[in-house]
Length: 306
Image (cartoon, rainbow, N blue to C red; front, side):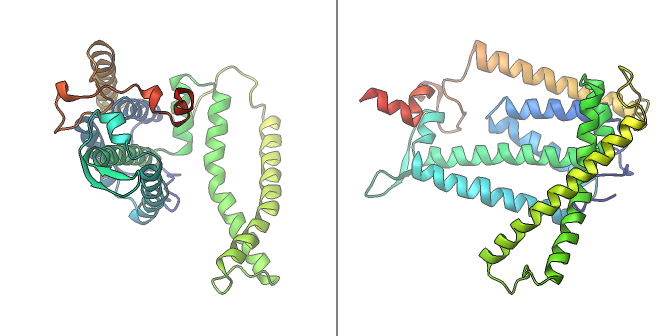
């Protein structure tokens, strides 16, 4: 199993690896819907734990996962929250309906408990989504992904494009390394000896030959598929799709239950009897919530109120 890029290209030995492509795609879709439909931390934490348990059960190489999570945390969570604090420190009031200020500067910047709670909930939500994607990528091969998408209802031509896109990622990475080594042998400095700006500028030069190489491979694959009569029939079979086992039936049933619970949550707590604010907070009571019009919180709407 090649986990260097957190993409599985060969079937693994664990229970999740042995599930069919349709089961993996269907359960991933239900998990994604369940994560998207709520900002309630009481529901997000169990979903996060399930995804983490799935990742641990497959015994992957944790190094690329940690690197990807660290990059995501710094670029999206850390920098994003700093910018949010500078631009909109009242986001806690807008989403929770209450505001208890714990620090105030001389200007318009201030920090509230609700802002910290908002950051925590959003972090848990993003981490649950990240873990769900990683678990699905580790368990599913490109062929299983394509066959599962086809079983869900997507045209098989679109599914084949998705499969080919996944399979060309390592080839593009190898071409990038080969082109970089060739340029370094010709005197282009790409090592740590050069400054960061110079390395970035020289790395951009790699993109032109890399794009031409990628287009050449695309043309070869397209010609090979045409010669073999691809797309002639309305349907096709998949080598990667297998007969569902008892484990598949159990996971599909649990996925259906998860989807129904998500639908019930949307209808019950979003439509029939919604919480007066966007997020639940443990120290804010129902009757104390200040209802905020979310449209009025958009920064450019303030221009029309002057």
